[in-house]
Image 1 (tube, helix red, strand yellow):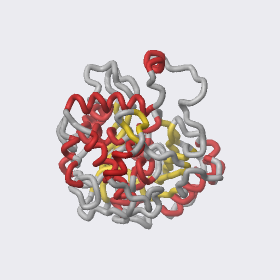
Image 2 (cartoon, one colour; image 1 turned 45 degrees about the vertical axis):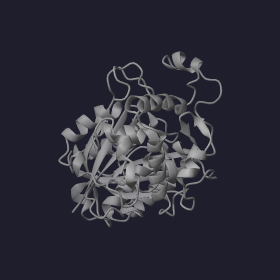
Image 3 (cartoon, one colour; image 1 turned 135 degrees about the horizontal axis):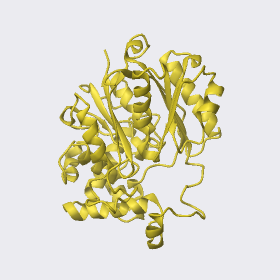
Image 4 (cartoon, one colour; image 1 turned 30 degrees about the vertical axis):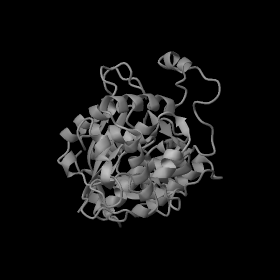
Length: 380
């Protein structure tokens, strides 16, 4: 499937803490915008890919946008790990002739809707061992992994602040980002309230209403579309042995999570290698996930991510700008799908934090959950 399919259309709604339209309406608007961007009629869409956590479904979406006969549809689990996999599965479907025009999307009203961990609920089997001890929310689980990381490598919260400040600086350049007009200083970071020690307010992603979508076709057809294509060069998913979602307690090494498994397969399928990556979109529901992903995907050595973040490396003009639209921390949190669209913009040359020499980009799902990643390459 290497370079056989390309993303040729992207679309999104506004982002806000609270939007009036339903998730269905938001999804439809984002998909129609992506199709318009690609110059492709909705009647040509014959493939769909989405998240298992998506409240909309391909039946409703296909009928609402006016799609034709649909010959491929899939869903990918584990929320934050699913985004790149929706693109990768559509690329595989196009490469093998299962469909010709594929749409992937994510719509969410997380800002105005309920939190999935609130209220009475029956914990999963692993949760029965952790919730009684206070690990109630994703941030509590990631906080524990963060403690392990800081202890193991002698790192400090300075590294977490470096991530937060770099990504906020990118958002300050992006008019569509929720944090566009809200600069963040190091003093503000360290004065912020705790959410779950050692993670403070600015280590956590936003809560956002909004929707995003992208359109894929074959690389051959992509040459005739209005915008430069972003070729799906490589794709992989990863679920390591003895994994426990979010906390990874049961494996031998909690700090080598799903990113490490995904990366092995990804780079084995890719002509582009970690040393070639000049810009990356790394899933950032929490700042420490960026550190874990930098190491897991080989962008720096194990235990080196904290030092790697120094001297503005991840920010505008840095050696490896990360999450150049503002990511989940400062643009919007829609389960990481905005990272895909920003990867496409980098390949088109239209990002508000454009990296001039970037002809490829890495886009990842969440570290800590069964995950996925794609390498996008600038097309001819």
